[in-house]
Length: 258
Image (cartoon, rainbow, N blue to C red; front, top):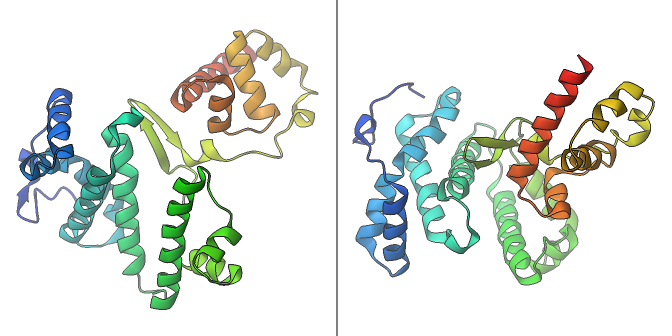
């Protein structure tokens, strides 16, 4: 993919409009009322988001115009499905959708192509999972998904594995302002339990110098092996706050140990 390309799909990327938060709110109110002109303006005002995403795929050797168009599809899907009542920034919601759309495009156009039948099974399973999650208010297990689409559990698992794209532990999965949460923050560490830490008197002493809330977060995260999402639910704060407090606590502990 060409780097630093100024014009993509006939769009001068150096002159892309930038919407204020107030403008976004006003436009989205009109979009929810079916105003197509407002939708078009909102799309144009968020094309910088698409541009920033496709720049992450600069090493893919794909045509920048193609990736930009695919990214715009992801942006439009995000606009059509965004729920303002969730109190989440639009960019936080849209970026993963744009990334997902680009990754699907790259996967489907890879030289190691997955058969059409496998892709069809996988996409049916994905759609069924989304529908069942809304219906059951929780993510269904593989067997439930397989029953929903009348397929063998093994066939569904094989199809989903076939289309899966390997992820880096450092892939961003959520952003809140300047705080980025990475995939590694969501991984539960079952090995890093208390029995592996308790012998370190210095470490325990460092923890004892933390404020109560930070102490509790470190205990839950590293002694009990919980994810940031689980910790956030348990102590009733946002995941972004857990991330900030955890980083701050680890910094203080490092300074103490040094």
